[in-house]
Image (cartoon, rainbow, N blue to C red; front, side, top):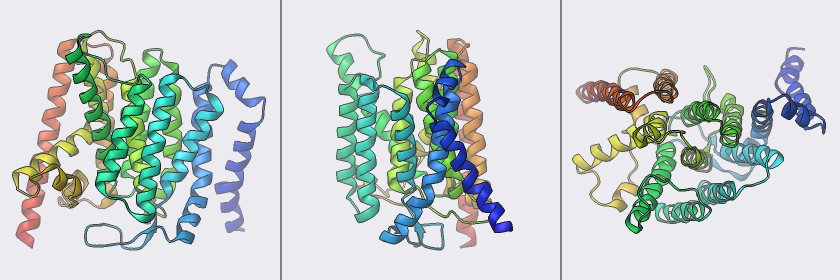
Length: 380
């Protein structure tokens, strides 16, 4: 009886709700009531939640599992095709609700290329060089369709600088989220938090299109989270590189697509930097740390280097459990997101103060991480 009730609650009811959402009259009702965002969010969440078990079964059948080793935290082989379910849920929710604009076409093509290359890596392995080439191609396609940072004077050198910064931003955030996908629920939860704040800012600035996309990403992330972040149990499935790079590409692209509704460039770029500050901090810190220690000396070495020196690794050296570490990082990300939302109605000096505050908070975290690393070295 308990098993039947559990099956009913976990699967039959969500399937029933999904069928109601797909009923022809349901979508127009949400559109007329001004709650289209809720429809898109719910559709993406249910699709992700219900397709993840199939992705897990497929991964097990094909032998696509992440096996434990000395670099990894998990202790049992775990399927890693979760990103396929997240991508499918997001894509279906978007296709069912939108006519593709030029910008969305560019982002969709770029995100799909990145996902497919990373999926190939999950299945049979690809070199970091090939994945980087695919990412560069994806960003190029996205910019061809008009998704590009715009903050310089309309000159040839200004255009070139904007192109270079767009490449750096998209590829940097994409890989930063991939690098942080080292603990159960971490990358998925950070994507959900960032998507929520991007959606809030989009509502504040009247950008319905961006808000709908962020709700689709939020829903598909939360639908996957129960399988990836289970209290008292290890994850039953991982995102894999296909999931983390897709999510990273979408987050970075959404922040480029978003008009931050201000003519103040300091405010305009402080807001996405605060929302994604955890990713920026981790990428910056490991780059400085690895370079200063001599662990990497060239770009190729930096790309190929794999180590347990990321934010979540170093926080765990302080004695936090894996779940506590993930929740701690969630709180940091949520706090920074609040700063970005508040900044919407702030001044330039407010933006500078909030960036300074973020710097000081992360500086405190660095002190704690170094202390934890020293304690670990002394014990060993």
